[in-house]
Length: 260
Image (tube, rainbow, N blue to C red; front, side, top):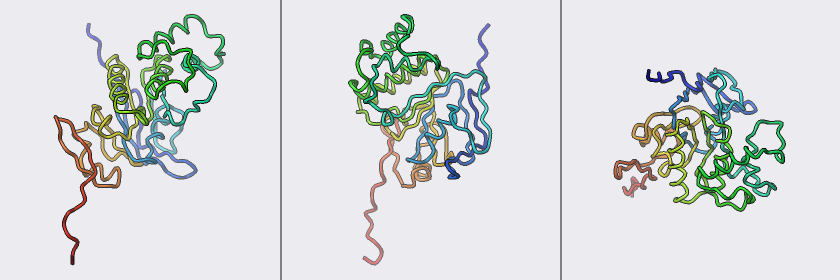
């Protein structure tokens, strides 16, 4: 008998408001994370992208509205690289092992746990770096290390905050393929990104966020001049190239000013 696909979302937000010190960051947000989600959340700085991830992760409570999650849902989080103290005295292996249940002491990792870490690093293309200090990795390797730490928890949902921030074009391309492979293996993924062309245009589902959900759908449905203007507060042009949408700043008008 074929398996019946699940129809209930992993997490569902309904009419959610969220605030910090009485400053509302998210307004009336309704959003579903499905078991097959591979979603990019785009929007300007301060638009509530990280707040949305915190609500999904469960580390923040909404001011009002409801959040329903599937029972015993395993969620893992990959932070922005800019928020990490790279001088903290820890090796790659020790950093990945931090994802073990709280109350465990790092020096007492079992041989099985260390083997699991090495296998995860190998899977992500950075095998052999376990004993190096975390600051001695490239930006792409550092990002993969944190993904390894997240995956060691065997999550059903992976949340990533700006996973391609500060990396070069080649690393960004590799990261996109890595996340696509993880999604194909059955992992639901929600990520935030400011990279409209290098990342967002390649994702199957986008959410434009600016304190509220402006629009959501496929890149073809979402990456339009009107939606982008509502989201970013600036007019942008959207071009077609080899079947892909390319977002560029709108060219200044060449018409003379009135009275000239």
